[in-house]
Image 1 (cartoon, rainbow, N blue to C red):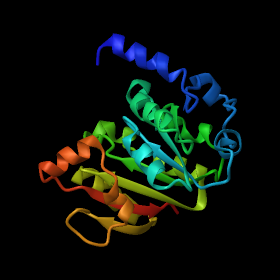
Image 2 (cartoon, rainbow, N blue to C red):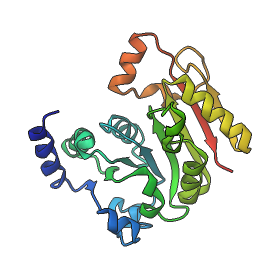
Image 3 (cartoon, rainbow, N blue to C red):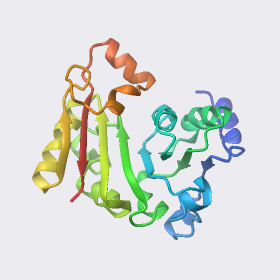
Image 4 (cartoon, one colour):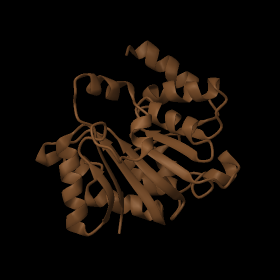
Amino acid sequence: MGSKNKLKRFKENATFDNVFQPTREEVVNDTFPLKGKWNKEFFKNDHPLVLELGCGKGEYSVGLANRYPEKNFIGIDIKGARFWRGAKTAVENGMHNVAFLRTQIELIEHCFAEGEVDEIWITFPDPQIKYKRTKHRMTNSEFLQRYKKILKADGVMNLKTDSEFMHGYTLGLLHGEGHEVIYANHNVYKNEGAPEVVTAIQTFYESQYLEQDKAITYIQFRIK
């Protein structure tokens, strides 16, 4: 994407009422006004709050919001030029149950209050295979503890990935740390029994993986 195009998208994001771009200072100093008040101030209802971390173009967040109008969704990514697409689609279709937040996942507990979130989706994250990249792996112990802070006591996590490495690593960690694995499958499109939501929504890249006959894996779990 050219820098001209990026600038255009950043400008347009600033006009969308479903896009929030707090400064790092605001977030770190806990002065971000929507923390603990997403439903009250933005969605204006008390529906369950669901996050998609590393939402990319926002296709999954928009797909979920479309399918589940009785829930509120927030796609989170540091790359605003990417989720511009999802935000624009939501605005054009008059969808009021989906928003986008531009911030780093490392700062997630500064953007949401304790127990504010009902469910979290992590879709096709970078597996960060190299050992020195472990600290950036979105399902490592440190990240799980961040998610636990903002999730309700019975809050649910979902990991959908095309990376067998990420699937195996996460499953091993969950069992090793004694978290509750609700459902795990190493090929959701070939095995029956996966929750409908897992196969009902596909991202652009996911449909490409499927054309290449690449297995899509899925884990649903609770952090203990």
